[in-house]
Image 1 (tube, helix red, strand yellow):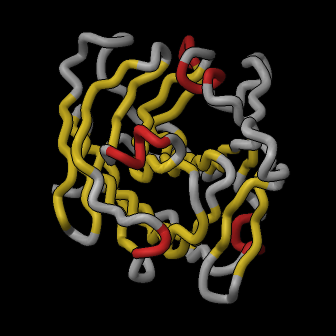
Image 2 (image 1 turned 180 degrees about the vertical axis):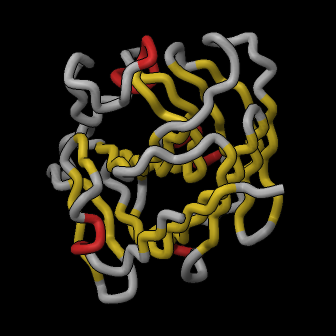
Length: 216
């Protein structure tokens, strides 16, 4: 099992940053934000867990929004295209610009679970699952997470990937389920990398990231 307590910045030193991410801590959790000025509307970033995760897996983490606007999402089952590792040196460089992930040389599933960047996202809040390359929207559901001003501490997020089946819950409330029918991009994705992503200027706290194989 991979376990990252994510209470101090030092515990994320082996995670792989793409884009201007700021990593600090408050002794209880890691605080993630953009290191770019707030005026830079392209100061977004992705932070990758160094481990390759199995195909059948339970991924959990705790999330608390601190300052908005912004967006929080994850990548999972991520690899490079053509069967390559995500960090194959032959792949184009990535710097946090989103098209590099959804329409570039990355095969991944994306789950955006805190979509408060744009006015239309805040007016009608959803969780979205996409499959790349190609920016395919494959599932959508209502998002129960409140804005930062109304948040009551940390929320426990759970993602279960069971082969083609994906389930997502918040504080044990089922939010979204989706099964990959194999019609896009050569069938369901298997093992791969997990990454956290934020759109600036969101500031958020994270802790207790855990991964365990799905059994049974």
